[in-house]
Image (cartoon, rainbow, N blue to C red; front, side, top):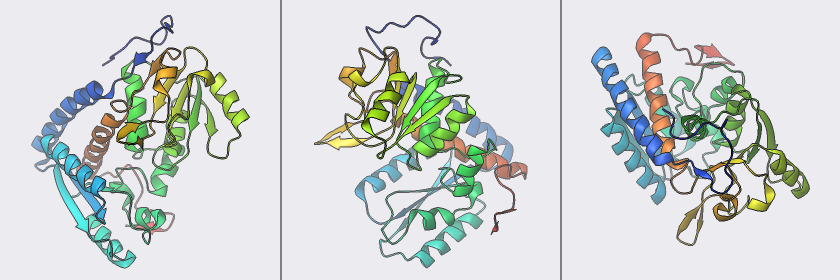
Length: 313
């Protein structure tokens, strides 16, 4: 479904099109609920998601409850796996081994942040890549760059799907990604590459002059740096399309990486914060869970082989 106008139409720079994620997410949830019902009717069981939380971060607890409600409302089964901050790496690995082996669990998502003694590398390495619905395992990200079947990280995947729903295509376009974190920036690079875009990359070490030269020539700009007002209207060319994945708190207000007020009169299309890319993430995660369940039900794990890079499962 296309929510907006095709980007082949004449640009009206007097008013940017708002790429509104809530309506898109609602539409995807409706279709996903029907797909899950069809799967349950055929397979005889529900796609299962395990949500693993180590520690007592309040925002992670709140997110876990929201995700559980969304999942169950759409017909998934959801297991909340809570563990104390004192959980050791050995204990964590045992928890993951149990979930990896559980046939009722098709996807596993880890809540961040984890305690400092549980590094990102150790946490993701314990995941069975066939259940890595966040796309964080090195095998998942590597396969994404190699254009092989895998799980893509839900947040950048949702951003790409949101653009697609409004009729925008990055194929043959100049795209700038600001921020190269593992949850958004790096998988986004792979997704853009797969979509046929010409990609520029900027990060905290990029000189200001270089950043300005990039922003001036980009047809699409994707921000994922977590720096308020990083991108402003005087940095871009008219007609640019801006997708903001960044989130920060300014006092009690949630903001993105972009200065929406200065960009909206110049951009062709732009995502708001909140209400842009954020609402799409959960539904993309659950679509990955259904994909994992389908792979297991068919007996063909197309995501990874059973033994690769000495990771055996």
